[in-house]
Amino acid sequence: MCLGRHGVPSTAKIFLAPGCVTRRNLQPLAEVKAPFSLFLALRYLKPKRTFVSVITVISILGVTLGIAVLITVISVMRGFELELRNKVLGFEPHIMVQNNNVGTLEDWQPLLKKIRATPGVVAAAPFVQGPVVVEFGNQRMTPVLRGIDAAQELKVTDIAKFIQKGGKLDLSGDTTVIGADLALALGVFVGDKITVYSPGNMKEVLDAIKKAEKDPKALEQVKELVMPRDLTVTGIFKSGRYDYDSQFLLVPLYVGQELYGMSENDSLHGISVKTLDANRAGEIVKNLDSVLPSGVVASTWEERNKTLFEAIAMERATMFVILQCIIVVAAFGIMNTLITVTVQKTREIGIMKALGATTSQIVWVFLGQGMFVGFLGNLTGLALGMTMITYRNEFKDWLANQMGIEIFSAKVYMFSEIPAQVVPQYVALICVSAFVICSLAALVPAYVAARLDPVKALRQE
Image 1 (cartoon, rainbow, N blue to C red):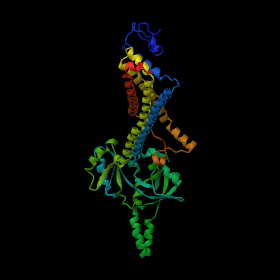
Image 2 (tube, rainbow, N blue to C red; image 1 turned 90 degrees about the vertical axis):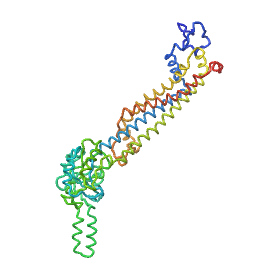
Image 3 (spheres, rainbow, N blue to C red; image 1 turned 135 degrees about the horizontal axis):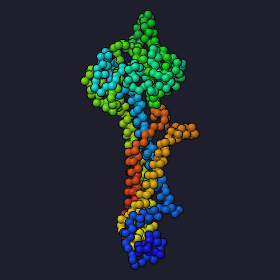
Image 4 (tube, rainbow, N blue to C red; image 1 turned 180 degrees about the horizontal axis):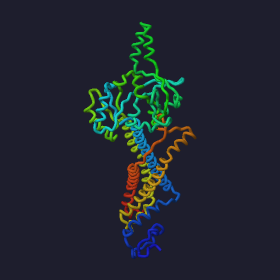
């Protein structure tokens, strides 16, 4: 039987035997709204081992892949940015006060008191920092020495929490705490002694050599100037950032001053400052400008790492746009599928319009297909993306162990593991944009199908 119980055409029978429909008790299809369009949309999507079904599956996979890759990449880049920020703020101070001409701070103790009294400043500590030559066995390297007062430095930075071996930050006497990667490169363990040479007095050395050429008695002065310092390794720190772990060694403040030929009470390279809020460090700098002498400037952690963070933000935005192209390509597949279906179902569309189907009903038949593909792609893409984020490091290790492929080198990216931070707003933006793209791709063939002339459509063979 072709008609429903109340004279409404059975949509399931329309396509099986459209010729048996009569006008008696016929009611417009407009009365059957959402179920009618939804029924046909799902029916057209039902796999029938045809070329159209293959294209539909490929379109869904395209949307899935695009969303999964976008979620993974954006989450990793966001995690990379946050992790880098945490490492920077853990090892570096919020603000550094230094001589603008890369010189030394003279008579620094009164200045330190003024800085500590500045509104917004929590703590401040002196430091000496510069390149040195380190020797152990037959290994020689040129890391960066940072001379600190441990008691004061712990109030400014979180260096103590990075100590991996040695138990605590012990800088009493002629001692040092070095980065894990630097220790590995030198072959150093806790308890070993390393030799440190400083280029800080290079001018004096050169002047003494010139004098020694004329006066052999001046040779002893040269030996005193180039005399190295033997330091005992009391700890090894691991911040997780390769730049710090491979290039820094911490020493007592007075050792750094002696290596650089400074007066213990009168000279420094700078002062580290901790503020109430790292994100408002720029406001505190304005307060410090009133107490700093001429030629001395204060720089925030954001300014010192500005180029790096701007590059990450730009890369994240660029990758979002580029990877959206994957979804756009999948949307073209959806459009191609619906155009093919429109051509194949021209006669059926004519029958529906002849029976009273409205333009909006026809549009929603084909628009519903595109929206369903977009929804299914969103669902599977979200699941795949979250799975990839969860097991990202296991996958990285598997590639390295089984295939010898290193996709996240610590020397390049500065982290031993792949960081990731899922931001719900970003995930929502990705899923919504993908759904909108798929829906827009379906709108064109849907509108074309709805505009078909019933008479011409029924003549279609």
